[in-house]
Length: 304
Image 1 (cartoon, helix red, strand yellow):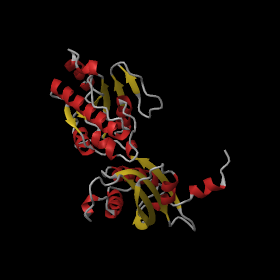
Image 2 (cartoon, rainbow, N blue to C red):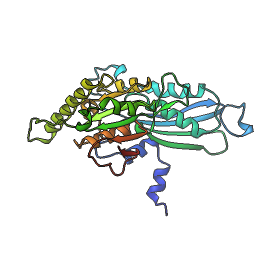
Image 3 (cartoon, rainbow, N blue to C red):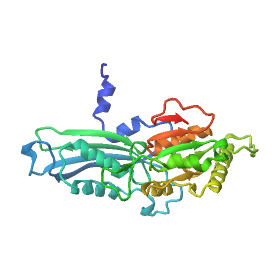
Image 4 (cartoon, rainbow, N blue to C red):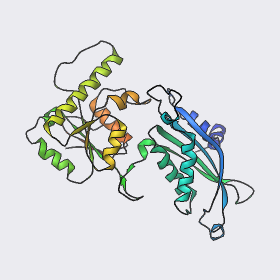
């Protein structure tokens, strides 16, 4: 494949330009750190060991919009200090051989921030010669799994997402089916669809979407009433808290879907379940009922 002039220019462009070039029709807000230089002992070669060298960091973080008024309160935003503090924290954890490892760890740390959605990270060594050598990565929140609260640095949590149709919700053996889903010891996020009942019809797509999301949430509470293990949650913070502790929950979708800049526009329950699975870096999506496995999923999906 021949690289065009624009491809070449973009390959060496600042992460800010890379972020702008890959933005969708409704781009996110961004915060950036430019030309931040720190010294660190890093490198795979013997001559690099025991000698600090300068690293230059250029980082852009795409963030979700703040749903409430800012009120000029720093606690309601992703502060620039969190970026520099994350760099310092990763460098303090121990010596590394590879910039690639440092970049991956830094992306994971930054994307654990509630507001962060995508990270563009460029790290360069400045003292290896009359040039800069470096690595650049792009990572999205959906690609970064959670860590177990009590686990070590390698104990990442990939929950499973299970869609239950109405027949399954009302099945006499619901408890046994939930037992089977929970048997592997991996936390499960249960999702449901629209209930089998009439709901208001607004004749207006945006408002109908909200009505349908609320109806799905009503159905989530129906599932909760049938099994005490099915605790309904609505925010990403609640989901993360439960998953880190190995607990399973039922998803009420309105808040996450409506807050998301690039969230799903479909009201189809399976599409919503797939979107959540990708957001949560789930191990798999399990579908109960007469539904189709979604095409083009980045998450393994299967019917039972």
